[in-house]
Amino acid sequence: MAQPYSEKVMDHFMHPRNVGEMENPDGIGKVGNPICGDIMEMYIKVKDGVIVDAKFKTFGCGAAIATSSMATELVKGKTIEEALKLTNKAVAEALGGLPAIKMHCSVLAEDAFKAAVNDYLLKTTGKGLPGFKPHEEPLEEHEH
Ligand code: FES
Image 1 (cartoon, rainbow, N blue to C red):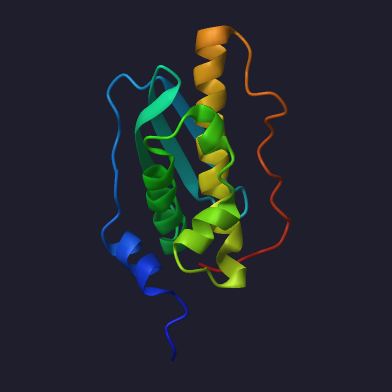
Image 2 (cartoon, helix red, strand yellow):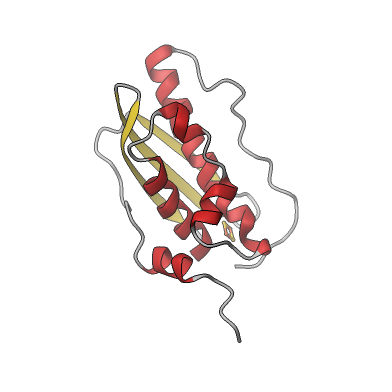
C-alpha cells in the first residue's frame, strides 16, 4: 500500500519536536476532539509579545502529533499577532500536506495554540482572544 503520509509528516510523527510539559507556562490551551477522544495540550512562554517557547502533549493519532509538533515549531519566535495568522492549512502545508481524512487533526493543533493564547491574554489583560471559539467538529465517525 502506498504511504499516504509525506516524509515530513512521518519525521514529525517519529521525532516530534517540543514534546512535554512546560514549567511555568504563560498560557495553556487544552482542546479535544469529542469523536475520536484525542486530546491536545499546548503551552506557551511569552516575552515582550513574542512566543519564546512552545511545547505540547498530544494523546492522539499520528497526524495530530505531527501537526502539533510542526505548529510549535512555526509559532516559536513569532509575535502573538503573527503566530495567530497561522492556520491549520498552513501547518498541514508545512508538513507537505495531509490526507483529506486527516485534515481535522490539524484543526486540533490550531485550536490548542489559540486556546493557549486565549489563556495567556486572560491572565495578562483580563480579556481573552477576541472571537476565540474552538472549531466545532463535524459529527462524523473517523478512523485512526
Ligand atoms: Fe483524532 Fe486525528 S485527531 S484521528
